[in-house]
Image (cartoon, rainbow, N blue to C red):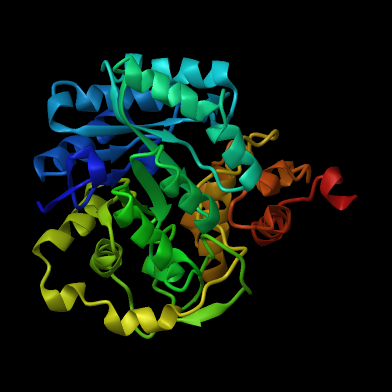
Length: 380
């Protein structure tokens, strides 16, 4: 495993880390198998933003006996509400869920404590101004409960401010081929280097869309504005090429692909032994000179949904079904505890979405594609 220094933290992190979002709602034995295999293969950096009790219990079991071999990244501002992810800025709620993290992971500290998912200027001020979550994170650091403070977000403008503030040690930011042409991205990465801020590349597969078998794809815009585009891939894209791109960017110490099973983990780890030819993304990057807005990357930052809809999974199934509506996809949709027809068009999800996704319209499309009867609220 290749290791890189994470900015001024001095931590040597594995170039391939692990995002754990696809391990939620899976059996404990499955979670343990994936985490233990990752550790066995040299992965030592794990991003852990979900606050669902069962998820944390499973993860705690997976890391039991291995805490001294890994770096755990917690998120201040990510909470659980009736089994669904929700973002919060409540000091009381954030303190509760951070101590819950320490208890369920059976640890005295988090290695990185991120100020979670901040994009807009108003929210940035809420986090960083006196009395906000930054002050709480610094207090936890002084108490020995957090070693370093991080900032996660999707917009160049707020990320630059965080980096240049001198108050954070690590930035987690979307870095992938699809976002190659985002204005200001290169300057942001250079700022991380200049300020010795460690850089964690999230969403290296752009929510999995870069790995789609379809040559024509809707590529999400992950940081700033832009016109929606359909782009044609000149060739299929592999996980190795995606990771190679992310790790080739200035200042990047580690990338955290989401892996839900051992096969996906092996596909990411293949980067380590890949040839230079297999890593080469130069011919592909020209396909992504522009970027688009309005495409879901299934991150579920839009939750919680008042109707208990798992929006990310619903839209993932919708996107796959548009290509080929199989019996398996229909069965997966029918197994959802709350379907798209439960949408009341309240708009709360769209307000939270950092990517400008028209969730309400997509919910209507899911109702039509999967043959549901529209509920009365959707007909008004």
